[in-house]
Image (cartoon, rainbow, N blue to C red; front, side, top):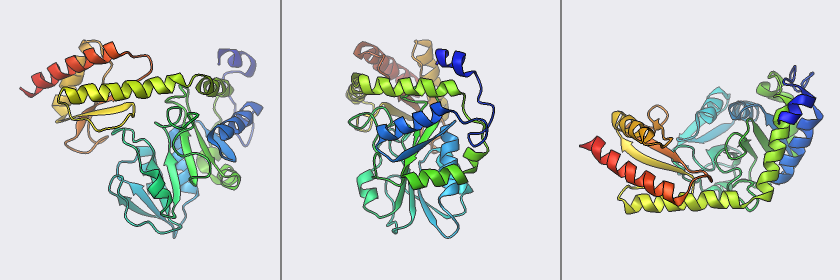
Amino acid sequence: MAAAVRTGGAGSTGSRLLRGERDCFTALEQKFAAFKGTERSLYFSSGYLANLAVLTTFPEAGDTIFSDELNHASLIDGVRLSRAQRIVFPHLCPDTVPAGAFLVTESVFSMDGDIAPLEPYKRLGAALIVDEAHALGLYGDRGQGLAGGDDVFVSVNPAGKALGVAGAFVAGPAWAIEYLEQRARPFIFSTAAPPAIAAALDASLDVIAAEPERRERVRLLASYLRERLREAGIPIPAGDSPIVPVILGGNQRAVAVAAALQQAGFDVRAIRPPTVPQGSARLRISVNAGLSEEILDRFVGHLLEQACAASS
């Protein structure tokens, strides 16, 4: 990325449809589409913009959008800004969705770390829109996520998590990406990302392809932490997602436990309403490949101690 700044400059000077277009963006979009197994992809400078673009461009007046109640705020806002009818369904449990409707979900949910039942959703006959923020780079045989190829209508693939950079790719059939490029206001009227971002993302895709042991290590550590927490009597949902929610209930308790863990050297944050539902304030633990079993063991010990202290 540093080398790209020296050759391509720090800024893009305008929107992609004007002076902001660069060959590096087109090449990166082609590379990502091949990685994802789709015909095309389109890069946005943030995941929020990508979700707003998809949900305010494809669904129209007379359409219906079914949205999971725990979807990310960017999906919720996109649904609200759409001209389509909106139906929010209970988490992971949609009502019968008619063919032709839009179904919007995350693949790995950002606060609970659970995984949407994408295969049953596909069989509903709806146009499936999937946010892959927490699956991209970790799931799939190549790290391409859980919603690849022609399995879904389009997927939104934020690049600020496992890819470690910024922005997001919308991936799907060529006609849909062309339509998005010509009609999506968040794309048309946004200044393009700095060209050096493309170089960084190109390198990220190379790392994911060349070093699969990184994602395997993350999921192994996540499973290890979940098992250790259950052994300590802390209720944790099953799975191997690196997002591990420790539900503490009250806001003050969650803040107190997080502060004590930070003092002990653990980078932990309390998540409270309105980010999560009332009464479900929590620690949102995010496991990464740089941790070790020994660090996780120490974390569980400190967490158990602080959780007991905060409830006494």
